[in-house]
Image (cartoon, rainbow, N blue to C red; front, side, top):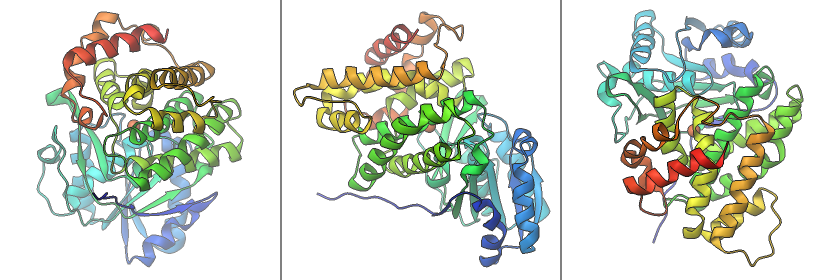
Length: 385
Ligand SMILES: [Fe+2]
């Protein structure tokens, strides 16, 4: 019996750490970066801080500001082709998961693989041994993409979001970049991190390395997420969430996630809801669903969330307690229900086939048929309104 886990790229963490971006690139012998972001990141003044650091270190740069939410393969192709055209020797993704995943996927092209990139973004993800350096600068405390190998990219031709695995080089996690994050994104991305930590902890591929990060992340999120929503300028809460999201990313590197993300991917394709919001809508019912299969792990999650236990709770009861705690956090942060988003019950349960087909269901601690997925989706619609 053995376990296999990976540790990920290096992380520079702390307030003001964006200032060392340029010197760290220069130390690696990198001479020209393509900065990849969306226009909101530029308006928030975050690109200017990255550029100041590059200028100070004498590292040249070009920019790609065409990132959109749920980036399609065409955006990745555009970024990768620009990197090749300007002679960039590395990619720097600045932003949330969309910017970082665009940079990660574009590294396939900059590593010498011929496009279009959709050749490599498949329903059952493949692992690419990419060589182009990728530096990731998260501006949300949620995705954890800065420390995972996975890039999630939309395939409009397939009406799906699929993935590919690549190598990354360095993460620069600066909580100061997260203070300007809008409240709704603070809630959605923080709940995404909670989904990463709780799903990986209950994955049938969980390992001791991931467990350590997962429980630590759950504890920090339970303590700091709602507070960071209520006090968005508080750098201490932002720092705790930045670290929690990074740990949650470390937690799901290998065990991956399961039903909440399978549901979230289907919801976001159907209703164009942001990734974190979509996953959070499926999270509480996912925990309730899997709890009877992993009661001891659900007890660990409950304790990490600060829920008082008598020790006599069975799996079902533990699932109820964790689900209610998650719903409590969602209500405290005004996360909209599927009804409020204009979805009908039939539309939601109609996603059962897509959920059952997701490769992520393979990481669930029990088998998921289309019927099981349909019942779960019905509860997701009924129990948070
Ligand atoms: Fe996620």
